[in-house]
Image (cartoon, rainbow, N blue to C red; front, side):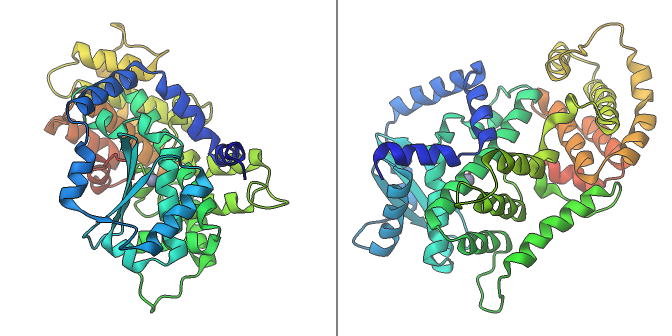
Length: 406
Ligand SMILES: [Zn+2]
């Protein structure tokens, strides 16, 4: 394949929601400013990533690991990666891998020791391809970790967009990995190993059983008020059975088969799979979306006024979040807070488990808008969570969610 053909193919398999959110986010001031800052810091210490890797990990030279390099080279060729790649391994019982933002025209991929030992060659190709996928799709240009950990947090609406984008970015990287591995069974078993932590021969991985888990999640999800905690659905990384399902659609699509699911249908399927994780209810017209929106509104007011009245900063955040609703002096704050019981009851009856969880996560974003969640804010959050039929533990899980691409 020519260079152009490779580029074209790699762009074709990119998840369209990743691309559209990526382009939208790149235009935001917060992102251009953060990138400018990162660039300035990088100029001050130009080789900091490499220095860090050399001092904490072992560089896998071609001489030491011709097999791993051969796999990486296959991925490089398949994805049209143009920068030279350095591979590193670090000691860890956890299966993990990461790709760093290129530095001085060099690319760095780091793999954990257990991953190298426990994964087959095809599975490793998927993992390496996934990491290189982040590079090929320029995902590092949206420094989500910096943005969400920085002193100036983006407003809640943008935070939600960042979350949504990062999940679709993982879907794109997964496709790049699957495209490199050229073996769907190996991709699925890699994701099984990543999510179960198992590599033992005692387990016979069964793809259909694993996919069944997603179908059951969806069934559980469809019944309001029932179901197991699903914190994982809402972390930055989609829960891996969900990713396997998304990859299964990809595998069945015309992108991978002579005759298959059209690209449009593929993206529609993936979107509906991920749909519950979207902040769509802020605009949705269904009865459940309206119930969620109303509770979010009163809940946000209640949280914002929990410690020492509603500050100007909180008002601003509130307006950014609700846009058209807008905060104004005519709002009867006491009345809104008093409406929580009734509104929560409605949400409890009308929405699925995932939607409830999403609502709590969004309220947390509002609580975190002024950078820390106070004890009183936490109490309000827990109160609402219990009123809509979730548990206090769900609040803790959502509060401790981390946001890094890997
Ligand atoms: Zn990733």
